[in-house]
Amino acid sequence: MFFRQIFDAELAQYAYIVGCQRTGEALVIDPERDIDRYVQIAAEEGLRIVAATETHIHADFLSGLREFGEQHGVKLYVSDEGDADWKYNWAKDSDYDVHFLHDNDEFMIGNIKIKALHTPGHTPEHMSYLITDMGGGASEPMGIASGDFVFVGDLGRPDLLETAAGVTGAREPSARRLFESTKRFLDLEDHVQVWPGHGAGSACGKALGSIPQSTVGYERRFNASLAFREEEGFVAAILDGQPEPLDEKEVGRLLNDMERGEEKTPQIKIALKKGDSVKIKEGPLESF
Image (cartoon, rainbow, N blue to C red):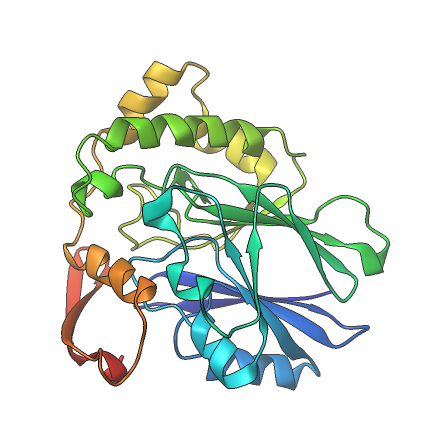
């Protein structure tokens, strides 16, 4: 199995390429809109990207999922969980080759098995992906692409539906869903590697570590947000002290959920947050 983590320092964002070296097929997880880098990395390893997926509808960068569908005709795997406001509406009536995923759905990339776990809390439709190298003889997952669910040292913030998207009263129910999702994570074996969607500098949590990956066992022992056994204590702690969200996060979500085209190229402003600094980029949609 081929595995590569790709880091964008401006956004503290991780994308992943997972490939089957026997069949030459590869999957990209959480790609940004500039997809050439992923295609090049795969080609250098003798792989062809045949599928793309993401863990959730992103609010802090423009997704490359549709670019893969338009430019390369790859199969797109997207979540069909969550409520009506958090669906991949752009994919519903599209001509892309789209497969809508539900909890515990599985698909294969060559001899690699990908299992989708519905892990809501950060967003309602959020998926994490368990990856098993069956071609290498494994019968259990090697790792989990956890997106904005579990980070190194932290969990994805559950308050953004209310504080950034303006959904009144969503903070506490989202935190309770996140608590239920942590039970699924803690049921995994200690050896399972954790491949998060962000690192230190992201505003998607309050204590993200700069180490690029971890294990379930390490997070079980040292991630303070996973130490709670009672729901009420968890909810109070996870909602306390979250950094102020950027207004542009909701803009990012809306842009990822809209149809792209010549008739919809507004002047937009995207905030790129790293540490305590914010870099504002402004221009037409096609310039990003």
